[in-house]
Each structure stands twice: as C-alpha cells, then as structure tokens.
Image (cartoon, rainbow, N blue to C red; front, side, top):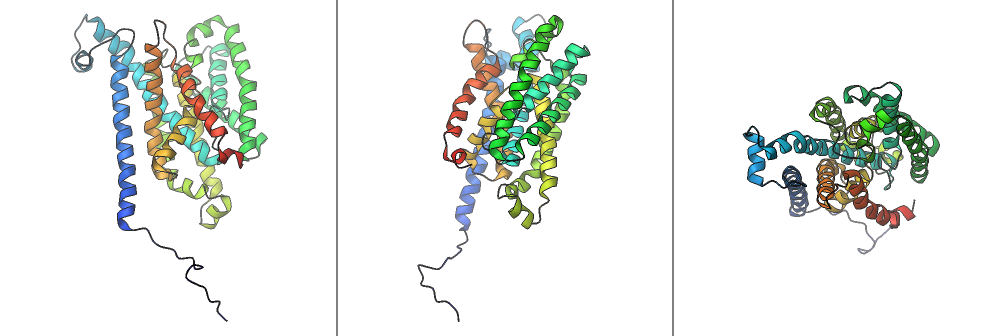
Length: 349
C-alpha cells in the first residue's frame, strides 16, 4: 500500500534554472578575471615601488629597452625582476599547496606550514648547506623534497588522518624541526650568511637562476592540482561517498600528497619558510567562488601570488629598513587563522 504524502511533505528536486547557473558561472569567471588583473597590478607595483621609487613609464622602459648606465633600470632588472618573479612562483606554489592540503585532510586549518611540511623542507635545505655545503637551488631542492616528505609521513603517522589530530601533529612536528633548523644555522656562520634572508621567508637572496631550476616543479604541481580538481569535490563528501561514486580515494590522496610535497618544497627553496599564505588564500577563495574545487584551484593559484607580492610591497614601504615578505604575510594571515579557529566548522570537528 503506497503512502500518501501531502504537497508540503514531498521532497521535490527542482533543477536550477538556466539563468541562475549562468549567473553563478558568470560571477565566478568575473572573480577569476579580477584576480588575474590584481596579480598583474601587484606585479607592476612590485617592479615600480620600493625604497627607490621608479615611475611606471621608466619601469616599462627598463623592461623593454633598458638604458646602459641608468641606475633605476639596473635596480629594476637586477633586483626587482627576480624578486617579482620569485613572488609570483612561490605564491602560486603556496596557494595551491594550501588548497590541496585542506582538501586532502578535510581540515580548514591545514596548510603546508601548519602541517610541518615547510619546517621539513627548511630543515632539508639547511642540512644540505651545513653538512654538504650545498646552497645552489638545483641541488638543495632535492633535500627540500626529502625533508617535506619525511615531515608529511610523520604528521600523517601521528595524526592517523583525522582532521584535528593532523593539525596537532603538524604543530608538534614544526615545533620539533624548527629549533633544529635554527641551531644548525647558528652553528655554521657560512650557511647563516648564505641563507640569512631566506631563513625568515623573503623574496630576496635568490636570482633568476633559481627560478629557472624550480619553475618546472611548480608547474608539475599545478598540473596535478588542476587534474585532481574534480576528484577533490568527491573527496570533500567523505571517503565512503567518494568510493561509492567510483573514485579511488587512495590514488587521489597519493597524487595530491605528492603535489603538496612538490609545491611546498619548491616554494620553500625559493622564498624560505613562509607561513599562513596557504591557509588564508583557500579561505578567501571559498568566500568568493564557493566550494567547487574546479574554481578554487585556479583562483588559489592567482590569490597566492597576489597576497605574497602585496606582503612584499608593504614590507618595502613600511620604513627605511625593509620588512621581509614572510613576516608581513604572517601578520596578514594570523587574523585569518584566528577567525577560522573560532568558527563553527572547526568547533564541530
């Protein structure tokens, strides 16, 4: 005997109207386009602004038709161009690593810094410099990857894959590895001199040779992140639901974990242990485009460099002595961490 339901009891699935879907998609396209413009503007300001101000017209001339002996042109091409390119590349890596980490762990507090990956990569680079005398990015990047991978294994082994435990395990691993890194640096004067700017998280201290070596790793991580975007949507529903939809959860997590290690290691080798960019960017992206990772991944790849370059520009303009980008980024990201920690999503974990 069939049950009779009144109209107000029935559950009716109403497909979204075509106009509503178009509006949502159009809004997301507009957000991504605006983010791309913001990155371009931040890149231009990074080239023009600093202790030594340069007009935008002179900045453009320095890029396309530099004049020999012009001090402004020499500063832009020799210092600000590498600094800006490193900020773009490291920002992309940090933004993507952050959104992948939060997707894989289903933890809104996850990012490469809080999960201990940056600390592991930093220790690897410092060990390379102090033990083997290796400071060139072409060689030290492999130490960064090994350090980040070891830290990731430790965190997941301690946290057992549970969101809150992973955050606590990441904090523990970072607290363990960071003092070791500092101790090794201060015991080796030569290594400290070579890595003093890098150690606090800065866009200085590296040149375009480092970019030439490290950009393929960032590109590889970005390609993997883009390829996994649709699978991350299934993963966000839970392992059981994702498996029921035919997804191989273990394979997805393995590829995502490899991409996170690749991106975090490359970002650390380029700019040092910059924290909280990978945390703040995905949360900002969700406010703008929602929870669909097919939009979150490209938007995080844009917001990461926008935030990092902005932090670097602010650090240059604060006073006569520049404040490193890693310090300013932490000041920007700390309120985001506090807001997330006080939010209902974390309270419910």
